[in-house]
Image: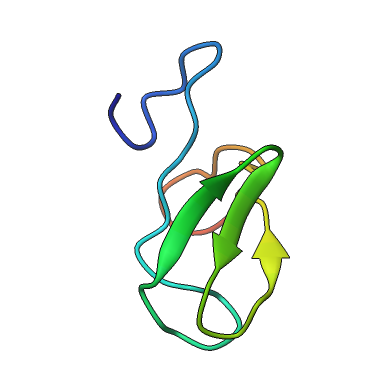
Length: 55
């Protein structure tokens, strides 16, 4: 499963926790768990952007 492939059922793989920056991450039922700061989070794609930053 590749990160960001965008296929149905695939999940993006984070490289670090967005809250503490640690890499001690494990897949959870509905997202990811950080075993360092004990937070759970999801990775969501909001959309595509055009080159130059305009939408």
